[in-house]
Image 1 (cartoon, one colour):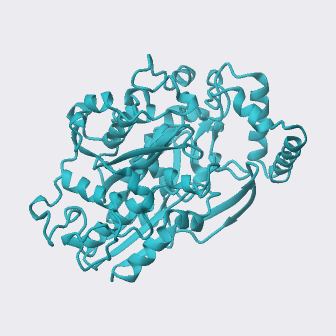
Image 2 (cartoon, one colour):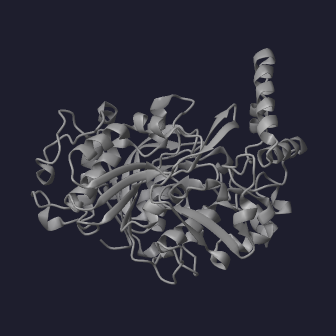
Image 3 (cartoon, helix red, strand yellow):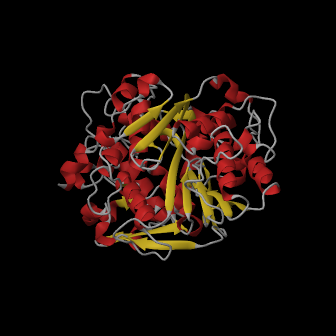
Length: 512
């Protein structure tokens, strides 16, 4: 497959998707899978969609329609170590369990990709499916909702390949009323973790003089940033199962993201890290002072409240004080109907780092993509890409819009995307959503990295393949997009028809 090619396949009859039941067997006896797995008496539009996407991309074209067809054989060989990483970000949603399937990579897509990966392995090698969700996510609950428990049980029961399903995290916690109330270590990745230091080559280095302002959304009454990010030091801990694999299958969800604008292939690498407390997501304060947590014009009350909250969340005493404040707010809500958290949240759409002025999270995301491309299994960053193969398949069937990634609204996207180049895949994904990639820092800056480049291609070199005639190029895709609603803090700044991007202009002025 050409490295500059991206496929986008529109799945018809999405109304049938609701009828799929785990373990999501294919709805037809496909020649290449005959005798390998059961078939369902229900149409499986997800399985058919993945299969047709591979056909569209020309995988093993000469054998298509025969028992010899092996669409991932060009990528995966028998005996290899394969890692598939979905996006299993949450285990609950205010709109109910069903909506989790709109926020996390869904079971039907993962079943289809896993089936063809195992076909290519020919019962020889290892296959791991794993992720590192946010620290409060209940991994077993997520697996149940998505049907992954049944998918993995089915795969493990009928192949000689070593099939594993792992939670990459080595630290988890629980929360109540938005306050972390419990935290504990767990075994994590059975193959351990590998640490990297990008040092001066980090995309965070230009703002390293502001490192004292770096904050993580995963903090648990401490601030780990001082240990991992400073001038000339930018450390990351990565899953051993992923970084030691021969082939990495990146299978994210297509959705909006309040801090990055969008999330798909590039942003999904956040989940390859065990230590989320090392990952800068924003900088405390306003752009005029080098921060990007809220806008320059934020009300004094907002700045004061967020300052107190930040102090509590990064100090050990906060584990006793912060939950009690949240408990008092709950009592106030019951008595008076006033929810202080909601009042603060609704007071300004540009806050909590979840707005178009976020100048931190995109830098961290690009760092992680450099680690994947240039980092070896021993923690060394090389000058040229390492031998590890990787490929992206994006689940945009049941997608999500609005306040992603944690509480977005459901969006039936009905599309699947795939390609070698994560940057080009995400540019196509953003365009399909109705957003201008040139107005999203994470995407436009990914194109311009000269030190440890993230792509070998310009947008002009993109070769777009689709089963929709109007989607034969980026312009046609943009003119016939899927009309996703952006997060509130990005509205009017990234849409294809918005007058200006603005991305992180406030932060750019603060760090110039």
